[in-house]
Image (cartoon, one colour):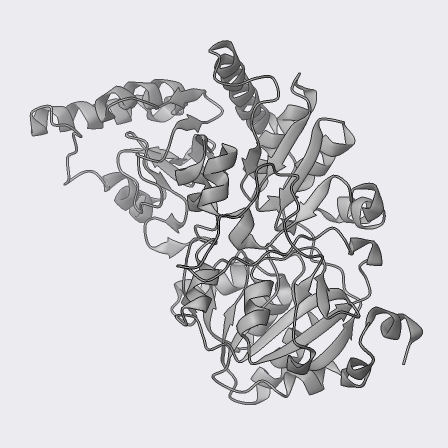
Length: 501
């Protein structure tokens, strides 16, 4: 056996557990419930899922797969297309499994990312037959040290009957010490999570496991699938400018200082591009408390704008992977990777007073947000952690371009076709057109701000026509709607490809 492998297995009795991916996959049977490491294409199991996919092509093998969030192509594309997944949760982001979900071939459980650990504790998810966890090392005192994400791995390892470790040599041993693994006690016996500052360390360097539960170790040398974000464009830069000006107005009003408050940014190109806008701003010594650190965060660290960043996952482009993972020791004192039930915990988010920036698919004229369902029926990715942060942050901000499909669709509609975040939790809307600050406003007061500040000019009059008709029809009700026409824009889009009436 290679010396590099033995060196990373700190418990001698586990060295003889090293097997091939095929042998490890052979333990898993049809109908099993499997918890896999991984969060937004980072730190996910890779080689054992490929072996499972080969089996699924030739035998009856369907398993339930629960993870931290979305995974790379090994699971959400290859295993899914091989027919190896019966049910998937709590978040996904690959077109392959998305199509299978929307055609009814794969069941999907969309859930707030902070809730999943509780569902495992209560046995709603489970019993978990296997946990497959990617690690950079196993220490002599029984800690699994994760790679580039933590996600739900600690709770899976704790409750699974068996553990399969993917020991990934592609990641540097310098990752040891970057993680902070803290598992809350059971509800009813739980103490407050003692994070008073994002920089606080409260747990262990790895996931404490019973070595007797480890039935197989598989050696891997595969990098994470790179992030799929696209570069910022003129419109996302405009959105960033609007957001920065809004934050400046908050400072002027005395509600923030120049250091702002801890920032959270959701997954995706738009949220990443908007955060990138801080690079040329006057804001400094910024602190991030988020689920995922995307390219923008590391660019801001390199620019001296971000002093510290806490997350549960690092998801970056191929170019930045080479720079960051090849020199992880240069970032080790500026980042910390935690379990998602800590990074997304409502108590901690509320205590720290976060500014949360998340992306919306569509927003309606009263400030309700749809993050998940295209046309109200087709799942995109899932609610992820946006609900965890939106309801509990000091400032909950949603960003979206004002249009989609080359201008055929408006991202601001009379009524969202699916409600993920209600008007009660949405404070600010930002598009390339401008900003609508909805705090402290009644529903009818929000309408003019949203239409005049955030809507694309091609759809403004059409929205005003809808609203004025709804006011007339309902006698100026608290929240005027014409229920016969509230979703007519979506119906028209489904029939003709455009929301323009």
